[in-house]
Image 1: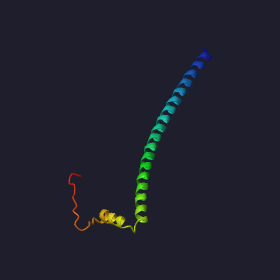
Image 2: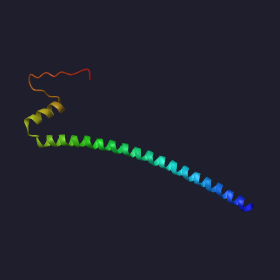
Image 3: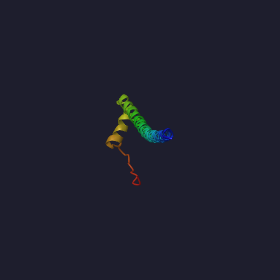
Image 4: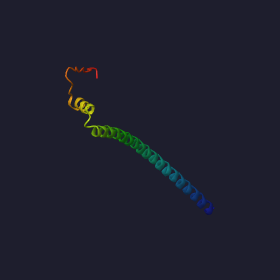
Length: 96
């Protein structure tokens, strides 16, 4: 009878250990999944930022390569300095 009680106790302890391991594994998996999702969101945000900066770099490279062109000089004067040609009228959209 004593051997039967010991076997029963061992089964109960083994069951508790198994449940504890399953709970630990579940919590760990959920934590890893959450961390992975955050990392993927950060990656997407960084990739978008890279695309934006690449486009800006292309624009600046174009301006640098064409810095002697009259059209480029006019565009830069309009965008950066707000200059206009004689006789031009600027309209501002107040709805924006």
